[in-house]
Image 1: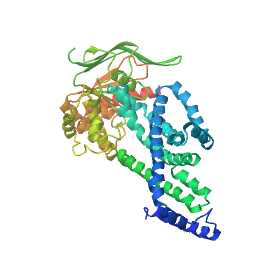
Image 2: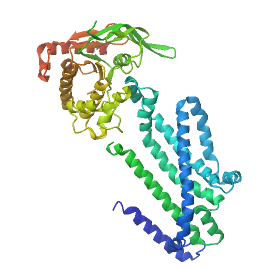
Image 3: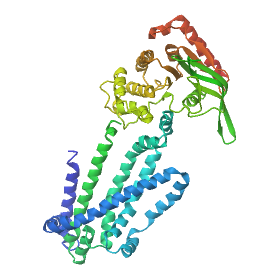
Image 4: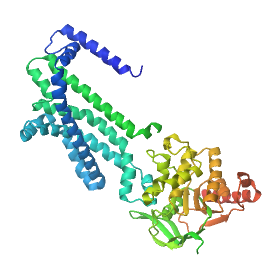
Length: 246
Length: 253
């Protein structure tokens, strides 16, 4: 029952949508779920073998760079109080930038290459990772640190054997926030300037007044995001398997 | 001299915070022989933990000398096995990995030794469990083993059994004595439980209010090995009464 609950809810919502969409009967702005599924099927080749891989590549590069960048920033911030104070406001400032407004500039910089989209993704996704990693590394209590020192541990051992493993739960929380954001970032980037990707494809369908064609890539993107998220949860469960005994 | 495991000579220590200075120890002497079991009792804030922090090397005295095994040094970190009040096991490490931590830090990769010790400490079959799966008593055993594997002769135990229920505590005390007799270690044991101190130790040291100048000590009139019934002998009860009175006065003052 617990496992089927989300599917039940999804089906109920889709049914409601179906009913309303049929009543409204304006396919070009509100297609029914069945239209969308049908569209996904007819466009399956383009969607799954052309645009989905393009988007996932952006998501993958964006996430990878976000993780590296986020962790480096977190490390710098834990290294000294001055760096922490210097970085924090800048970090927050990056999050107040309206992405939609700045993304076209990235396109001017990088053209219709993958990098303008990657940059949008990073700008959105590194933040939760940096903050979570920072809080995680700082979360080690003095008691544990002193225990390590009393065993003669040096800074390196303190870091790798205590602070890093202790930060892992927080890090994964940050990663779980970052994954959907990276998917959104990639889609926004494609929407604003690209020649492939699900976001780009959705926009192209928009210009053709193809309602179902707009929704089809979005639905595929959601499912891809969901799968990616599930993968992170499984990875977390495996890496932090000790947590189920806590 | 050769018999000396730990010595304080004329040790003074204070905490400085801003302009205010809190003197904890003032010219204190202490001598612990190899293989001795010594308890330190004191009310909270009496400087028990400070003494431990000085011995482990987390703090150094402003004046005086601390000797480990006859050697005076200001770098004692890594030389004394410390078992903290809360077990402080790493939840992400298995029992074996937790116990092996001090060996890892020393760069000693004798994992075989760890498995043998786990057997001896009654932890066989628990090697691959996580601390979260163990009872409080079991966790304390792992914590004690970890302190033992720190490799030094001296073990500092900081109220290790204070969070356990009465029965578990009793069994753990008996277990501790057994291990101590087997391992031939020197143990310093902090507690606020007078009965526990009397049952376990050769000598009991009482800390008054800080700053401490002289450590008052009493020898426990019991031989070895001991059983928990021995704690009811009249001489022991008399000493217990004396100690209780000693604390009563202090708290009234």
